[in-house]
Image (tube, rainbow, N blue to C red; front, top):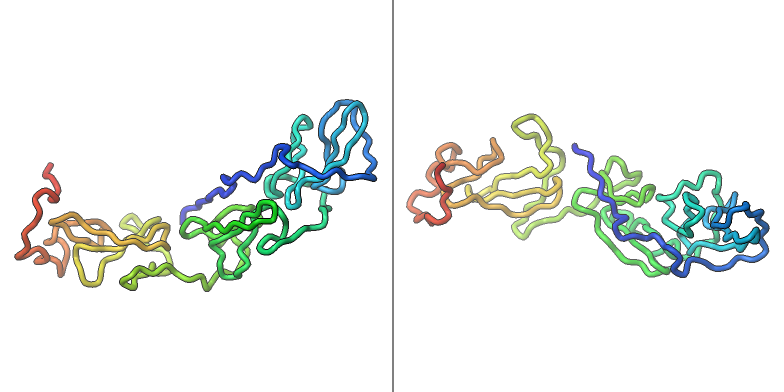
Length: 248
């Protein structure tokens, strides 16, 4: 199976000084000579603004941690974007309904809704789906393949079309022996119609152009005489010439 990652960080949970922080008192920090923003050696969401040798302790918003890549920038980000190293401690969480912390990306509270996640901003949860076939990985704040996600997701409800079709489990091998990323399947009653499974899991209906039928051996639309059982599909039908494929 092809490895695909969908980066859900497009929702951009990076804070550049927007209500960045509550001032923290009672902290001692020896500032370097150069003014700037420096991390606390023990707590990842605590940092210091240094100016002329004087320090001012600050906290990132709950759920975010301080990015110490550039002392000239005051930046808090989601934990999966920051290497905290030995800075293991964090402020006490301020949970709200659906949000373990006030800000960040979190797994859905329904243990079987692995293909959904919550994006929390100031304690307000917003539900988002992963792309078809991908599940939320809370370690990376990304949507990823099931085998990369450390959660039990065996009972996720499949999408079902109005005629009852849902995508079968497992990979489908193409004519070249490789797994098809978007496999197709024949319609049980209509030679012209077929089904497409986007990313192997999201079903949708498909139809061959007039004069063609679906060939499950090649996974393509083909001449009726080349598909056993569909040779006479168009017999007695008036074909729309405007929809017929043009001859080369």
